Amino acid sequence: MDGIILMNKPKNYTSHDIVAITKKTLNEKVGHTGTLDPNATGVLPLLIGKATKISKYLINHDKIYKATLKLGIKTDTGDVTGNILEEKNVNIECLEKENVEEVLKQFVGKIQQIPPMYSAIKLNGKKLYEYARKGATIQIEPRNIEIYDITLQNINKENKQISFIVNCSKGTYIRTLCEDVAEKLNTVGTMQELERIQVGQFNINKCISVEQLQKESKEVIEKSLIKIEDIFEKNGNINLKQNELQMFLNGVKLAKNEQDGVYKIYSNNQFIGLATINNGRLKRDVVI
Image (tube, rainbow, N blue to C red; front, top):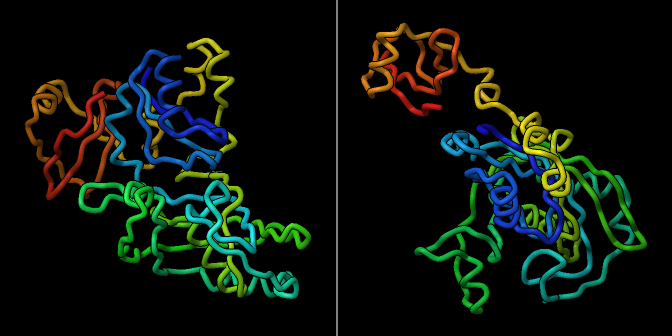
């Protein structure tokens, strides 16, 4: 079983929990391409079997989230699971649709964002959340990210909540975005809900639940598997002759007059794996 399964991660599970459950259920090697917070739900692509070899190609995907921002409170974790650090009044007049949309628009484009302390970013060999749990104060450098679009979904004035969909680059922290939006609304805020609805080409509509994974047979689950060659359907193909194939498998670089990039490799119409071309030389990368 080699390919990608799209899991709809439920709340209160870590990404590692889902990997462990899948590994135990399928009895296969399993990896993932990026974590989701325990409080978040949604798309979690899992690499099964030999697909774990292609993880490097799947870690830089853009993402789409649906988020709910709770105004009036600020927490140490940036979401509602943390301890409240500050409470502040919310001016209901600021929650008019036109005003909220204008504020959200200000974040569209290439911006700098300071990651939250409760994150897995490493500094001097330790994750930031390890420093945070010890109460350490760390200077965090801002990161360059890009927000392609933000669409307002709902405003709940009674509960002081704003829901929106954000299409963003890798490395964007929605918890930080929520805090920054709240600041623009002259108050404080924290992330209440987060659902990841798309990672690159992988949409939540194609996800299966943990319950489905555990209930269905391995044969049924395999039908929902995305094949490795399908993931690279937009990449070019190179067909190797038998003598070329053996040299390729042995790590010999072959001369190919093609543009630089990643290619799917075939021999006798059978998918062999992936290779890269650099300056006219074809080099083996992932053999399936």
